[in-house]
Length: 302
Image (cartoon, rainbow, N blue to C red):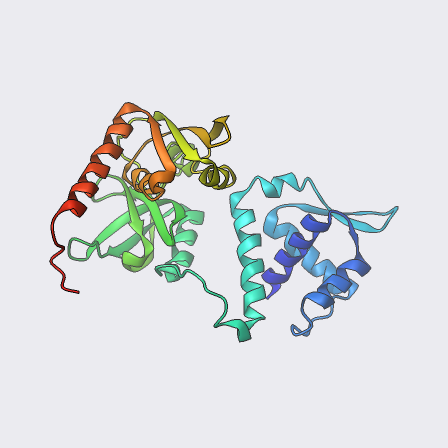
């Protein structure tokens, strides 16, 4: 509950920019009477300090106007983790207070494995190895000792990326395939080369193989292009041209299998213009699909 209130306070200050204590108390009362917590000055100061510690920020007060504000709010906006915390906590809090609408709010569930988050993040904080029992899709369960570099959430799944000592290489482990995860006493050295900003800078999703980095040119129809412009496929994405019918974007990344699958999901709203190797890959897949559906009969009786 304390963390929720701290996140709520930061979210409010980000929206309102500058706000007095009286206005904060009014906003809190309107937000949720059912918590049974009144935001007296001492209570507010407690949650103010909590919020400052959570987000590593300073919440200042302008003594001329008695307005509270976040010093350097752009620091919060630069952090994807802070943005994720604010957005997910705010939405889950609203939904939890609107339980009577459970048949009218449709959500996508994760594939599970969140129970391993605490152990894995503790190991990351302490630079300690973890022992995981992992059940892959194509083999029996096996035990691995892993140096946990970072965690990534992608397409409703949690993934651990780290160095597997048994396999002597970096591996990706899906949380929902872990039977167990335990902290060990073995230490490892975490370097700047092991961060996602370095290791996954040129990737779309969770696959990071020896595929070469390319300049990818994608041409979308105007309707789909407007969506892609607001929801970039990759941080390198830039709009290079636009007319009344289409938008063309340039991205620099590895066109790995998961990226190709994403492109195929856009169907005829997308034309890949470059590189030629990706054009040929798309053409080959489309031809295979055409051949599949040209076959007489499906083998399924209606």
